[in-house]
Length: 327
Image 1 (spheres, rainbow, N blue to C red):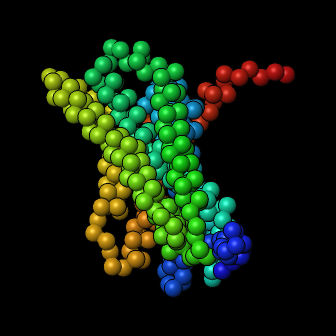
Image 2: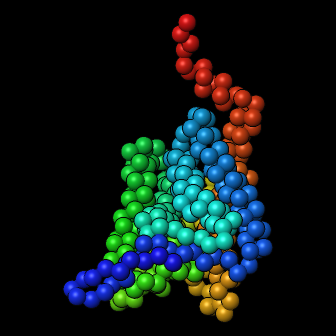
Image 3: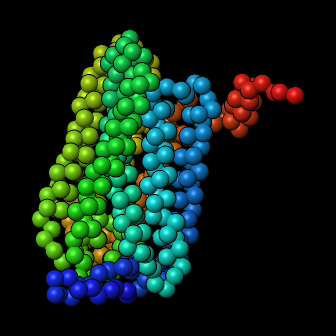
């Protein structure tokens, strides 16, 4: 445990310079099991999402707004897990896990930002599906490249701006020498438990941010799918209805997984066993992002076709054919 004593206005004040991440150090054997599982899942997450981004870049058939947003979602998932999983894996092998004050601040900022921006991006993707099914004749006009870039930028910008505000308020609080975080990483609620100042403004900001950047996108997604289902049910042909809904099924599955695990984590009754809460948070942070490329691969014929073409090296040969060879 490290801290510094400084004198401010005639009074001693303890300044924290390093945090201890408690994790599951009382159960070292379990940490070894988690190390193997998390390493495997993290590898699947990075490789799967990187493959999605690569397919969307290489295959011209995937140069559409839906796959543009999907590439952004895949990039967010890679960045989100990479912001805390590598250090967490190292800490699983250590007898005591520590992180510097700036490192903890950066980790909290990134995990919070990427979590909120994924909520906004899922709503943007729902709007894209609404326009594609309910306004098909105007789809190319409404969802042009500039609009898509602005919608993606709004998702990234909202998450980063919101996290910056949270970070400023959190790290301006006094910690009075408390530096043991009862978590695997610097999660904002776990960090706030160490503060010894007034948390009323922080609690208000968390409540407002959750309403604006979590519940509002969920409401927009819900309304989009109400209109989508209404439009699909009006289609006379069963084959056409199935084709229309199949373009939304992967996104809808991702939304259910994302908000389902999020709701279970934060709205379930408080567990008496804190280890269970930490394991659920670990599941949400590590497992959920790795499911997205699996869902889009299994439930999307175009992604499967692009993957098969890549395995046959058709995509790479087509891409290389665009560049003339200069002798």
